[in-house]
Amino acid sequence: MPLHLIKLCVGVDTVEELESFRDMRVAERKARGEPAVSRHVTRMSPKRAEEVLDGGSLYWVIKRVIQCRQRIIGLDEVIDAEGTKRCAIVMDSEIIRTNPSPKRPFQGWRYLKDSDAPADLTAATGGADLPDELRRKLIEIGAW
Image 1 (tube, rainbow, N blue to C red):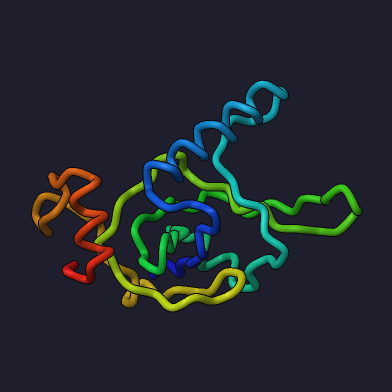
Image 2 (image 1 turned 90 degrees about the vertical axis):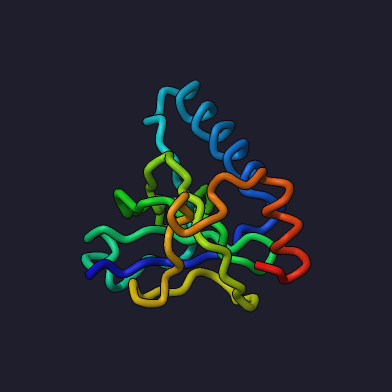
């Protein structure tokens, strides 16, 4: 069973904004001749990396609600400008919307058991065909 990570998406208000930010960062990496992948650099590296790499995803908390995820495809060690080791969470570029799930603020990332992860948003679960603005309003008022 995969083990997931969950992280606050600081400075982003919508999934569309996250998608735009992802596109911009991938284009910047590509322009520098680096691999055109989606990644997030964090201070700590998961100790349970093998479980995370066995089908895990990074679940994004946007405005106190888990709203989407990206499949994790790698965990790379990187060195920042000050020479400090960091962990680059390398993700599939596809952002998959999930059923909205409220989440209290926390720092850094946390592990998320597969059994506790919200299901993907699909036509079968309802809401996949809603306009983004309506979905956002329903989340804001607590109706979803």
